[in-house]
Length: 102
Image (tube, rainbow, N blue to C red; front, side, top):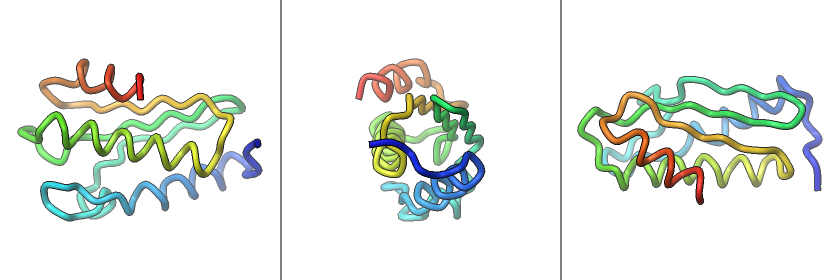
């Protein structure tokens, strides 16, 4: 199965889908909290960078959000290499490692 969206349409589709993920701590969506920092797409890759709901968010919350983002990208556009990264969290290296292995 391959991705049938042109790059800009794919970027918009991914943004729309992941924007509806809810922060389990607050119940707000990623769009409401403005947590999606960056989406980059090329022929082979999709990269998403997001921020934590707040600087004291639990690691498990951030891992949950990162894994949900990754699952949505796999569903929307299978076959792409996916990198989901969190920034601005005290434990971002550990969180990113867990997300990348999921």
